[in-house]
Amino acid sequence: MALHTRDGGLVMPNAWDGLSALMLADAGFEAIATSSAALATTLGRSDGRHEVTRGEHLEHARLLGRLTGLPVNGDFEDGYGDTPEDIAATVEAAVESGLAGIGIEDTSGDPEQPIRDFDEAVARVRSAVDAAKGRIVVTGRTDNFLQGRPDLDDTIRRLTAFAEAGADVLYAPFPPDLDALVAIVTAVAPTPVNVLISPADTVLTVAELRKAGVKRISVGPALYAHAMEALDRAIKALVAGDLASATTGISFERIGELLARGTN
Image 1 (spheres, rainbow, N blue to C red):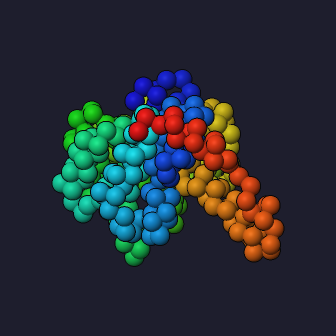
Image 2: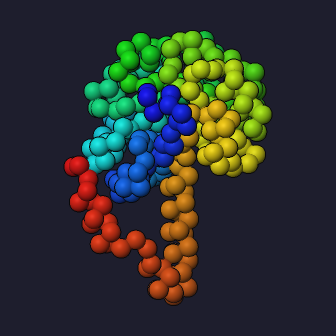
Image 3: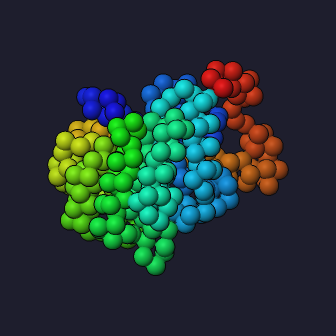
């Protein structure tokens, strides 16, 4: 939690496999996170539809932590369960797995009604906090903006309630603009706020986000998507017969060096 409350907070990038985690650790990042979207995609599944199990995500998070020795925040969707008791069990399992943080969303996995009712969402965060007992950083997250509900007032209402329930960090991915982001940060202060890359309308710098009061910056599946874009270019080069362009990239010597540094 100290990383969130210090001046400047932290940038917490999201890894998707062992090598990406080791690369982030080698670059000097002090903490990393899983990405539920990237993990689901690597398994050939959809994110936010209960297609990845709690056990699979825990195993993935343990791998990242074991290899890097860094604190790992679990991007655990809606907590992998229908009831507050299920959420408590997920938090307990995360603590036992050595995770440093866990995120609980107000999503439902139901495309017809993707956001849970207010009271249910708050009860689930409260259950996570009660189960955590201060042993793991709990992030309360509302996905209003991601799910096509551009209601800033309701977003602030939910985040404020999550803070009152004891959430350590608050998170609403992609507020529409900087003014909305500042409104969120101001309304929930002094609880730290996480931002996914930036507001929806423009990508700001780390310095600009810190000036707005943001304490934690994550990138979700963006690094994974960046890597897949490079792969897409390489595949197109291969189809065109350009072997040289298709086969450039990180050397296996470098990969070996990174693997040797792992704490596995």
